Image 1 (tube, each protein chain N blue to C red):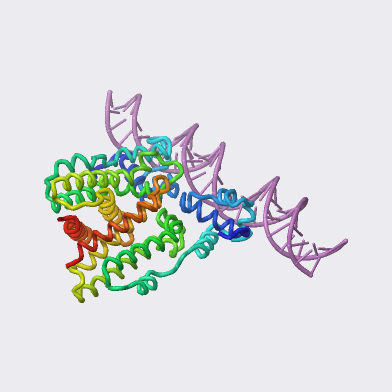
Image 2 (cartoon, rainbow over the protein chains, first blue to last red):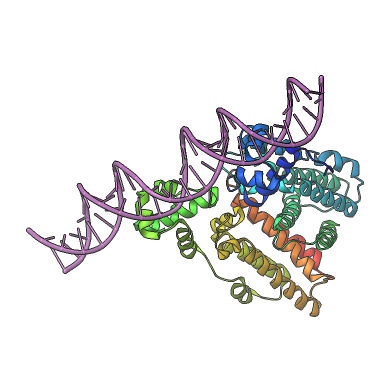
Length: 195
Length: 195
DNA sequence: TTTGAATGCAAGTACATACTTTCATAAATT
DNA sequence: AATTTATGAAAGTATGTACTTGCATTCAAA
């Protein structure tokens, strides 16, 4: 976070924090202004409408780096190492978008499509990449895979479940627990998928 | 669903359907009345307030059967069969509460505690039961488990992720896919946890 | 047949929300 | 020093929401 945020930056930050916690509809512009430390009128001067405010916040904070680039660079053909890289990369990207994903999951009548799809985009990507990876590794005799689609789905859902649980701020999953989970779950899948 | 529902039943059904879709705050009493095919005044005659309406709907539709009873009855000491039973039971119970869990996940400023905890109660239960189960099975030399807590967490998060994905009505997971997932994921874990 | 119960309809109340307009003030810029 | 920009404060508008009151209608029960 920049040391001396502008008025607009403060508003965007307050927007994303409050909407992640309460959802779009349940967050009022009055609350956003209060949290940002500005007058409510100022909020409308900068962004026009509540809907445009969310769109601006989305564009400001959205981390759009795709799994593919990071995944291709990390691909080594070693199942254990690759699954570790995949899992860590996934949680890293999901965590960068954690607040936008919270907003997406809580839903609303008037969310932009980009926001609505935020929760499912990277999970879908992970599943597709892993299915392709398992198919390729199977061709090289490095893994035994009867059903790469479902196995990739299993791995993705496990990490998706872990991430969703970490959104719960009341009983947050510690970073230590998440790291233990990543290591142990990759160990389990490596053993399960090895010849 | 009863063949000839009373007015109250129709209201409760409309309540849970709409709130699961849109969340508590984003659902108006006007919309509920419309969906139930009754006048809005009738809604308040039956339930008093919107908050009491949700509480009544929760009490009406909540499936409270605990994992423990079903799990103890199904326990056989065969890892593969037991994991299958566990996974199917879990999805069965979660699915019966799917709408209440949707409401819980979407959140709101004024949800009763019972509703708020709905999403995490059974996952927590599954993880605790499985951790105990793995510890017991390890004592009998039937599984190799270095870290039963994290392994149970992995299995639970995988099923939780699958369930969360099935809440997405736009791109629903088919029952066939879910069954394939349950069978394949149990196969993976059985292999991973066997000596 | 009469009475009671349940519901619909119309018209409201109190409050809240998103947003606008006008004027004042302070700080930055020219 | 004057002007411009940005923001705050006050007062509003339009609309919506949860909920209430009073009266009418219909159906069930006595």
